[in-house]
Length: 173
Length: 191
Image 1 (cartoon, each protein chain N blue to C red):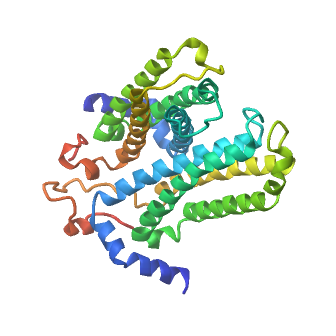
Image 2 (cartoon, each protein chain N blue to C red):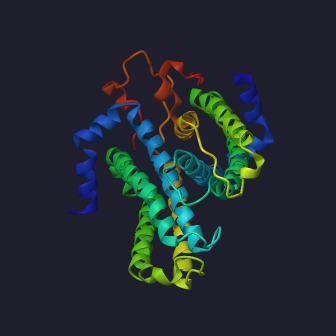
Image 3 (cartoon, each protein chain N blue to C red):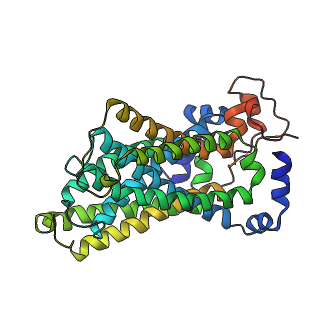
């Protein structure tokens, strides 16, 4: 992984990103704005599953309101995230927080896809209002915590050695 | 008391000393700050977009407003507490940082915008609560809010790149000690 990160760092694209001082802060800012949109959209759907918000709206309407924002927001996050990895490959790839974040992200996205597939296709955008089991409600709560952990780990990448100590794979001289 | 003396007092407080002495406190508090700020932004955006007529006007504005801002305020409270904790141990550098000054200014603008909206446009909400286009003053407040909160996030991120405390760990630092270590203080570049 270190060899790959070092190679990536030597590519001209990586050098270009690094050489323009405002690129990384700007891309990080866009990444943060998209995180706000994706996380809150997910939160609203989860809260609706739990029955804590929008009781006046059918679940299908809530899903139709927020799921496109999650989908397109994730595309923005992937594009900005990849840019940040190319710009600072060693800092990102050689960080335990980054690796854990990618693992949780895989779980988060696949469980969201599985959830959407488990619904009747007619639910989305319709007035249909499925009853959610206690298990589904627990899953909704777990999902919110999972995405909070993803956000936490994202910021912790910058402090990998401080946070993880000897567990951090960051190269030390 | 002038600002510099105030910052100096905060900088020299026991809390401040403790935070500078702990390696993990600052990263953890900063990560929680990010969770809170992104939640503030995302939830306020729902209200702002409703003011602009998105997705439609079929849900009463008062309902969207009350229901969503509950989460905004909770997240905002966390952001203020964690933000203050980040400020205190680095007060000296924050008060001379332009991005920080701009972030505080835009936050103030956000507050003024909400206050003006509450005391003027919101008073007439009965006339445009549901199935009616929001009056121009409300739409303007929504647009200003989106712009201002976007700026808060951008300036906030800019602080980390301009104030220079985004410290790097000294390469020879030995991590076999418990999580906090006063002896490492000299090695860390806090200014």
